[in-house]
Length: 241
Image (tube, rainbow, N blue to C red; front, top):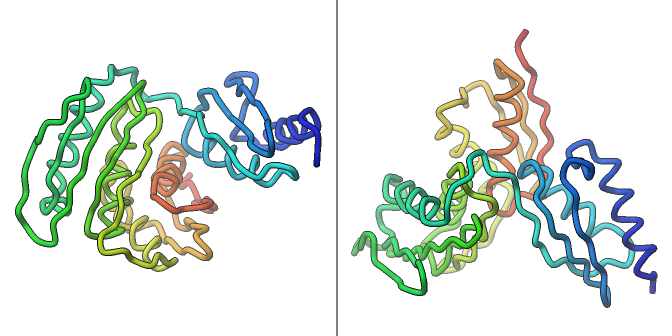
């Protein structure tokens, strides 16, 4: 078994070779015990967080990860404000109208909106230190994915834990991931989704096409990363000059 210092050195080296991860601006605290690596810190964006997880689990000796990485929010918001914004976003989404929305704050669960439509879902939302927890169940994987992205889009979100079950269970596949990413890009009012092609292979999403600015290129990539079950994003978008 590899020693603690050897493993931590390997993780740091992997991070330093990834341009998305800047340990000088965003330090990551690491600990390693019995094959389990704990990562804690605030990274610049969702891509940095997901890549850090991917790189860390690939280091020999690491068999599991305790994820305490957060992303820097676009806007610093209190937990109550984040909770309100997430609930509002879920309520306004037509694709989630068959879901009862509940909010949990200070140990008290409140029904925000009750739906009796079938197939019926229940989404419980809570927030702690900017981390959004989505719990209970929804009728489809597409709804689980959409709810997660809507939570990520709230400016104060630092992480989203999408713990909702899909009832009845659905088998996931690349086509469903592609469809979900396309749907998210179409809902992003800052992007022209018609100019972006999405393909998925083994849960690795590739984006191709054109965007007008570097900011839009990055925005489209982040949207793909937000989608539940996406393992990696290859951003081949071209910025128009």
